[in-house]
Length: 368
Ligand code: SF4
Image 1 (tube, rainbow, N blue to C red):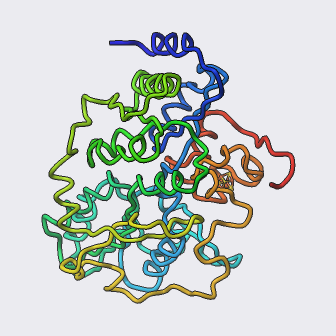
Image 2: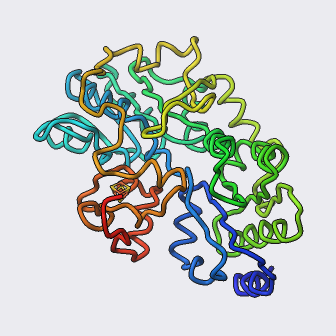
């Protein structure tokens, strides 16, 4: 096996005629790159920019608000993956702005680690409604689909905010200003959906791409592949994670997704609607759709409804337009202890990852 050191040697031996920017679109990739210090080990003219890899960061603000209101106003238990609990919504000072605050105020809100826990909680008290607030990309949404396909108790419903990764990349590429020269495609999404999902990047946009796993070796292999393609004027999708990524992906997971959910246009927080980028429950699962089971608590007149908090540059961080420490609030008002935006809340958020990686100050002198 080629070691990380050997991959780095190969990358440094390349003749790089210009600066190249490579985007990753996975919070797990960004965490591995940051924690291993790979940016500092690469040649100065290779940049790795984090892109749309955090589903919690782009979860619609209105959906978080709705989950908070259901938890507060209905006699229900709301369960969600842990990092959703601290995501802030836009409300007036003194009002409850996160699921965590609603929980502190007495609402029954529980963090879970898997859909099986949601089923177990619903079974434990069949008289009580349980709402599973499920935000995530394909890898998280497929197990939710599997849970519903296998049958759940009547008192369990799902408030779904599932998203597909590739449409955000397609939107960037179609904008005419993608801001990157090559792509490291997400290994875990490719494991579920198949590598074919990323073939459009080289075939339609002439951008080199490589699928990587989460080790330094795999990420550097992907980086090397993309750089070589750029230098040699070639363009293809290289599977650098063949041990898990197979043609067609995980057929069971994909079957569950197809059976339970349909693909719809969907809102990404701070970004807007991206065509065919979200999952919605099919009509035959409407009895388990929390958006139909409970009232709609959205308030159109609510100030900044749907937007990022004031001053928060999460949307541009998610789109790879700026690095986390180019947000003026980074390390000033916004830290993991006092997060302003979702990118500082989620374990997959680039701001939080950079903070955990030891980058503690904003490089911005004035408000941008
Ligand atoms: S540092 Fe905080 S305020 Fe700035 S983009 Fe990140 S989460 Fe938003």
